[in-house]
Amino acid sequence: MGEELKLLGVWGSPFSRRVEIALKIKGVEYEYSEEDLFHNKSALLLEYNPVHKKIPVLVHNGKPIAESLVILEYIDETWKDSPLLPQDPYERAIARFWAKFLDEKCVPAVWKSCMSVGPEREKAQEEALEFLSTLEGELKGKKFFGGETVGFVDIVANFVGHWTGVLQEMAGVDILTEDKFPVLCKWAEEFQNCPVIKENLPPRDKLLAFFKAQRETITNFYKNKV
Amino acid sequence: MAEEVILLDFWPSPFGMRVRIALAEKGIAYDYKEEDLKNKSPLLLEMNPVHKKIPVLIHNGKPVCESLIAVQYIDEVWHDKSPLMPSDPYERAQARFWADYVDKKIYDLGRKIWSTKGEEQEAAKKEFVESLKLLEGELGDKPFFGGQAFGFVDVALVPFYSWFYAYETCGGFSIEAECPKIVAWAKRCLLRQSVSRSLPDPKKIHGFVLELKKRFGVE
Image (cartoon, chains in turn orange, purple):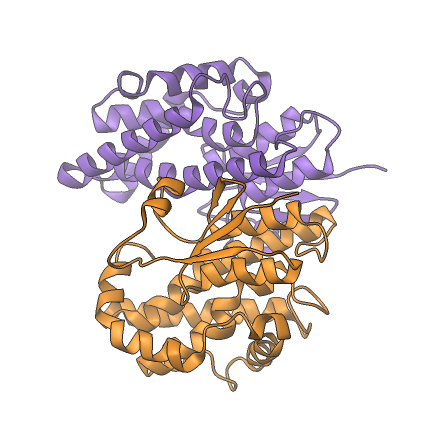
């Protein structure tokens, strides 16, 4: 059957890369379209995600799906090989809980720790340390959040696994360090070395250069987002 | 096997109401435990150590936190009766998207309506109405968000109807005048026992909001 699958994304976005990782794990072919978020959102993006006007958007046979966690579940339900979520309803509820925790707590706190200034930054740093500590507790010596192999929560934690290191270097802050979070750092290393992940992460030096150069633009752009 | 289902909840919480509705739709017997949020029980702190919030669904001793996650869990475990999620993956994605939209918008905007004044309140009212209008557009001419059958998005949104009177009174506006289709939809949902028995009297919610305003020093 002629499947038409298109992803509207941004090369440096962890949310966009989550979808790419999932599609690669499933071995599904797709057409990728790079969006220019800061200056010129495409007509296609505005048509396919009129509500939020954000990436990623997955378009399957002309039908759009927005919000990375919603997209991940859609991918898992549509292509059943190499399941991302566990089969057991309770395990699934736990996976969804940690995905939500990552998106609503960890990502904003780490982002603000690196991108904010003054008291907002200090508060964010305290929170980031607390949230990462909670996350480390959940890992509990497992190789991945998904167990022996990368699963739903690992994919959602890509921001912790790759972007955090880059952002903290750019900002000159110490959040995710080995002495504070040995388990999480080891996980990050395993995560980044996983073949399917490795091929789907933006190169570290390119990401660092991007954040350094764009710091002000990004800070203004994301002021109302996170 | 004897199922043990406990719900840790707080009567005015729209999030708690979602889980009550889902349990009622499935006809599940459960033990309702009212939490005093100023004095959280050891059980709540043990079952939700990360957020220390209600609602918490406890099924045979195992906790499920976050209302929409609990509703999906209920739907998946008790899948033989009254399905709340559609079966088609694309329809499911749309249901999750709109439930997420409700989560991102309605509670926070509603809160701003009753707890702020002046420009901030006006801005919140405007955005609140815009959000409901968008949801009205998504509802269209369907009886429920899921189509012919009451479903996930309906469960996610309808609890906030019990707060409309409080929002209207505090904000000095009429939600029915702005979004008649949403109010009509909510009244349709209330014809279901699962909903009417899970939502408190809007006047009681208003009383609760007045108490909160006093406590937080909001005029």
